[in-house]
Image 1: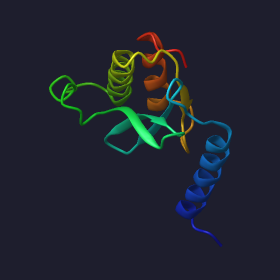
Image 2: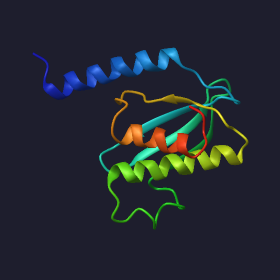
Image 3: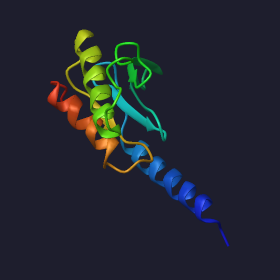
Length: 123
């Protein structure tokens, strides 16, 4: 019998392959990949054609270091989404495709995507 954590990891890997198989990013339309851990959230815009990261933001970014104290995790994720959208707009990128990876579109992942949309990025 498979343990509960192994079963969850297996389900997440299957979901990740399913989601990633359907989307791809270009230089004009990058893929926003999201990773969340228990204490941090990371987002990066990836050009899959060139295999390069166009822009990135996380809770460890210098711009966000002092602002995040006392915020809830979903609020922090929203700040990361706003920062990523700002960095993409600085590079004249207005559109992106959202890659939630193995995570459900709920909670922190959703907050990041919604904040990026509110900041003017078309997802």
